[in-house]
Image (cartoon, rainbow, N blue to C red; front, side, top):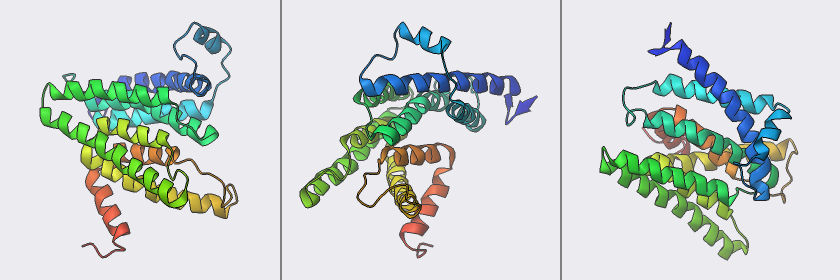
Length: 248
C-alpha cells in the first residue's frame, strides 16, 4: 500500500522514529539549559527511568509523518536533502521551543549545532548547484541581520534588548536551511504570530503587560509553517495582511 507514492512501511518507520526522537528531545531539554553534554553515558540510565512525555513524542512523530508525506523518498541523497535536513532540524526546533518558553533562553550549544549542521547541508547542496548554497548563505545573513538590527535599535530607543541574542543566532542558523526568500517569510510570520498570540496571552491573563514573552516559540511555529505550507500561499496571505487587503 502506498500513500503519496511512498510505501506505508516507511510511514510506520518514521512514526516510530519520531516517538524515540521525542524522548531524546526531552533528554536534550534537561541537559542543554544546564550546559551539560547531551551524548553521555548518563543517557542510558535516563531512558531506563524515562517518564514518557506523550505530547512531545506524539508531536514529533506527527511532524515526521508529515515530512515524509510532503517530500517522499527519492532515489539520490541530493534529492532527499529537503527531507533529511528537516528530519534533523525538527528535534532542535522543538527543543528551542520548549526551553525558550520555560526558561526564556535558547542555549548557545543548540544554536551552534543548528548552525554547524546547516553549514554541512549548504555545502552538500553546493555539490549539485552552487546557487543554492549562495542563497542559503544570504538567508543566514538576512535572518540574523534583521533580528540583530531590531535588537540594537531597541537597545538604543528603550535602553534594553528588544530581542534576545539567542533569537538572533537562531535566525542566522536557520537561514542555512531555508535561504533568502524563505527567511523573509519566516521573519514576517514570526512577528505576525507573535503579535496575535501575545494579545491572546494577555487577554486570557496568562502573561502580564510588563512580563517578558519569549520570541523563540514564535520563530519555531513560523518555521514549521514555512516547511509545510506552499511558499506562494504564504506570500499571498502575508501580502494581503500587511497591505490590509489592498494587494491584488
